[in-house]
Image (cartoon, rainbow, N blue to C red; front, side):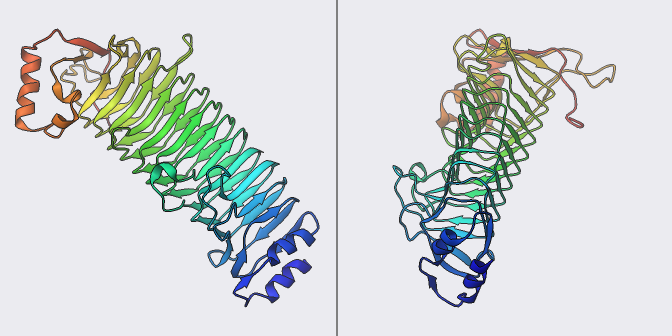
Length: 405
């Protein structure tokens, strides 16, 4: 294209004033604009099908801290191999690195989005690809950063291999049929947060050092599999959470070093439906699975509960955890035997809650968990409890071995 030749000829300039916008305005629909290394002025508007390809880290579109850096208001647009940086800081305007509205078949690929309040904002965007981008927000406190990726009424998109670092949330609101896979997120708030969303697939993502790993709220008909969530700590630290969520399949995930591995709140929401929590490794969390409010009819099978300070906890008052279906899980504190060698314990695994286990209700005491004093208190509580123990769950066929799960 003539536009591409013009831009290449000026590649020695330090700042290409409005050259990029001029090239976009002049280019016929469907053109490909190839950018050289250099610094281009932002506040770009793309309102026709175009392909814009840069040379990578040194092809920079700079928003000069004013508004959104690149606005896409057309279908069939591709941005690739670009650095997009320095958006404005106004939440009211949703200042972003890339804003996409009312479009289909948009591709954002192999881009670095830096120092941008919001990273990639999709509103009413469908059948699009967001792949292999690095996204970080402005150096603000966690709560006032923008979201690294946000979907709003956006369906049937693929979001793959993106890395969010020190953004706020990756949010999917009122959006259905999306594939979210092989992404990573560190030092954010919600590494992945769903609201009023359905029929999404979440798989092989890795989330570390966030306040919350994956949280599904008011959503349904979704599969989350083979994800790794680590080190979700603090008072809100949750690996995977379900609130008012129905017909979910949560399988083959690994959750470790979190304050709460699973957090189940009024899920499934529909009384005649189930959630299937199967094949997960719930390892070395303060609480392996925390039940809150009325949460029954979950099918919890073939999971590994190992190294948690407490495998299951129920704060609902009426202890609803016992009304879920527990099947063939591995429990590291199971004390039964397997005389016939079939890999299944000869007696059921039954977990009781002793009201005098004070560390559960007092985080200050939790510091001493595992100490000789607490160990003796726990032993005495089981030997001669001060109150009648309450049954949390029964797994009639507990597995003897964790291998092979």
